[in-house]
Length: 312
Image 1 (cartoon, rainbow, N blue to C red):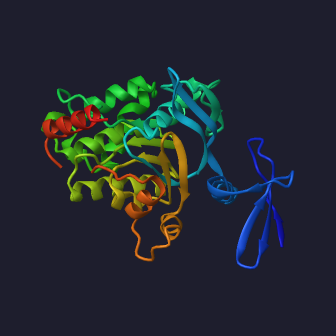
Image 2: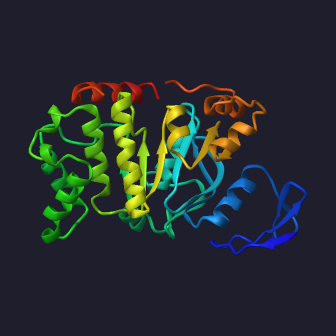
Image 3: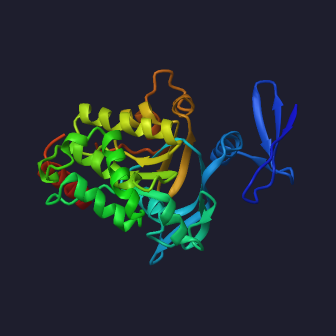
């Protein structure tokens, strides 16, 4: 049986030929689509892409940090981007949020090119970095007001938007408290609040639960999932916690040596190890040959993130 699917972003429409239990995709010039590209193309024909990455490459003084990476992320998807230190995942994210210009290749975020439309891309994304991004000497409300002004949210809407975010994150009672008195989980929720004030369709998070205890980690993800369910927000995140990625993500991508070596649903990646009892960590080791290194106060959280940054 042959199926033809419509595509976008100037990608040729492939035919899908099903032979017995196997599934084979072909481009319009009869070249087969295989491996990572096959999985990614099939998934994104079924779910509209809001992030489209094609042959993205970044070189630093002859070193190729990201090497011709291609993948897509669907609207409303929770997408885990994994890799050991130095794999290229942080460089890829920095290109997607326009902090770094690619050496070659292209990516679109909600239809805007990261190279030509960088200012527009920054308007439609939220970004939560690994490092502390709130001011401990300000209250929660003051931190959000500062971001509302930076995002140029109309003055008449700022108070209501801030209170809406505080209510959504269950931080209403802490609105007037100095952030330096917050726990690690409360800090992270406030940082997420800063990133969603302007209601972006795409939210990038770098190690969103780093340094948090299991209870705080679950609470953060409870709110992120509510954000996805309520606004169809696409959540693109990195993590060193394999169990977290396995539990919350719709799909997982694995980087190694600057290349995308695997992408798919967790069950699919585990099945490719041929180990019926495999975990996502087992799959990660299978594809990369490497292992991943694995709430406190404001000071504890800041210290933990600074140490992780120094260690790469």
